[in-house]
Amino acid sequence: MTQRPTVIAGNWKMHFTKRTASRLAREVVAMHNAHPQSECIVFPTFVHLEHVRRNLKNSGVVLGAQNCHEAKTGACTGEISPYMLRDMGAEVVLVGHSERRHDFGESNERLAKKLKTALRAKLDVILCIGETQAERESGDTFVVLARQMAALKGVKAELAPRIRIAYEPVWAIGTGLTATPEIAQEAHAETRRLIAEHFGPDAAATMPILYGGSVKPANVTELLAQPDIDGALVGGASLTIENFGPLLSAAPK
Ligand code: 13P
Image (cartoon, rainbow, N blue to C red; front, side, top):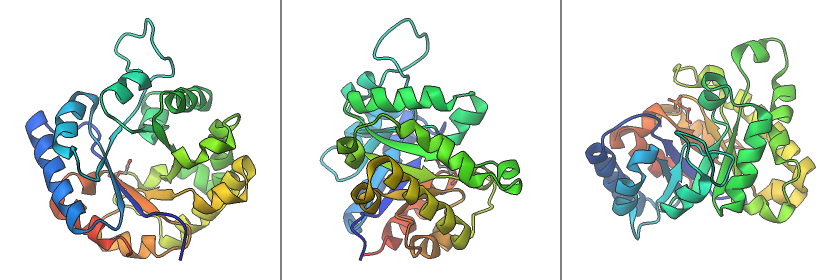
């Protein structure tokens, strides 16, 4: 029996209206109440945070944000501070999602700053890491993971319980190509070794590592059965309760 909770998280990306996001939030709450064995987090867009928050109120479902800026306040037109997210009721933020890294050019250095400001703002963090297809093919997967995990450098070990990692191979995101459970497990085991390097063996034993990349009801059980896969960060299949519900009920008891 692992000492780690199973975490099922829905990254809603740039989808929904305030009405449809609110409805899905209510459906997720009902499903989570029926299957409370996992930790459940939803990540709506910034503009839907308040609507979703109202619909999650007093439920066990946690409200998260998809991104934040690295500064507390300032002349940063169009950006959102982690302190603002905390003020809006978010409890956790994604840092380093591959769409931020690759479509918006966010560097490891910048992400390291975001992670630290978010922790200071009292947000928990899910640090997203993962290699591209080209990096995997050239045998660089572990080098890339180590470089991305270096965002944890300088973070005090006592903050480790507020951090989770999501391994999301870029080639598996939104492509329908899921990493096989064996490929995912190998990357998760390496990620856990890197957690131990940063924070020591206790943190490595207790920090959840989520897998992301085309997770769906048909493949979630075999992924969660791997010893180092502690949950899922789900994009496409988190957008309807028909797909997301079975992921919550699949979490091991
Ligand atoms: P998909 O589940 O759509 O592949 O997206 C994964 C993801 O990016 C979650 O953050």
